[in-house]
Image (cartoon, rainbow, N blue to C red):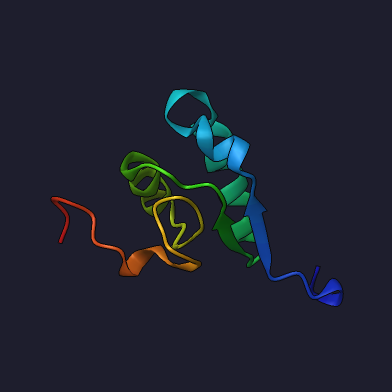
Length: 83
């Protein structure tokens, strides 16, 4: 992978849309794979607080979607009830 200059794994909005109801195990496995390959993970289509919370728990801090005006790091976005 390093020869190919791959630095990120991008999760499609379709996977994120179903995160709360069924794709969480798949996303968790993808995160494990990405971490073992030293890739950053970018989640596309984040539109709900719960999605953002789950992604942050899994270690995803780069998100795009309806919650955001434009691309930004999710760790800079305040989640209600979290410090």
